[in-house]
Length: 220
Ligand code: ATP
Image 1 (cartoon, protein in one colour):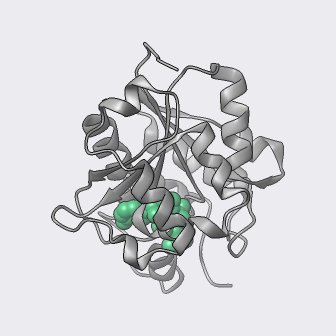
Image 2 (cartoon, helix red, strand yellow; image 1 turned 180 degrees about the vertical axis):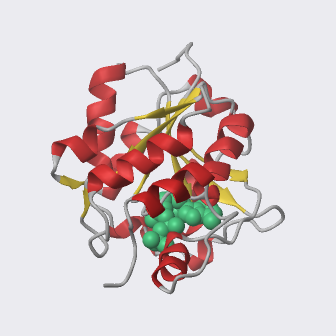
């Protein structure tokens, strides 16, 4: 099925808290893949990891602050507001219903998240609903030999060399894009905050101000 609309990026995560690694991934993806916008979808209750330390509403508020000055970034509060466990496959089904069958959608993933894809609910159905774009380091291609067998097969079969097919078909391809490497993780930021150290320059000042105002991530 051909499409005439530019692709929309879909970026889900716990964002506990959102940081410059997330923001740079979305910005690199938007530019390199020619996306019209990136839809940020903070998870409600992530099923596949420990419960976040702050409330879903607080994580949502922090992502809102981080995106505020970028008109190509849009916040989708649906998962948080639904108060249900978040499954990417259901998020994409919802977006498909809203945006129609022909709109190209590109699920943005870090390489670590892609490598763990076979543990996701109905992971093979994802390819029918969106393309997948994987952030990787310049000069370091993803090695299918290091992936679970089923995922490696999908990767080999669906991989495209450039972003054009992501904007002409609604779903089904896998592409890589080069991301500025930022060794930042929410886990590390939470550890810094819990031990009273500064997280400055790892995440936006507005998010740090929110964390301080609400006294988040402190060990009791
Ligand atoms: P945590 O440390 O709590 O596991 P995180 O920083 O990895 O959190 P998530 O919300 O779990 O953040 O990640 C959302 C997405 O962002 C995932 O696809 C993940 O691979 C990607 N991501 C997170 N940090 C980076 C980073 N520094 N560089 C590239 N991708 C990242």
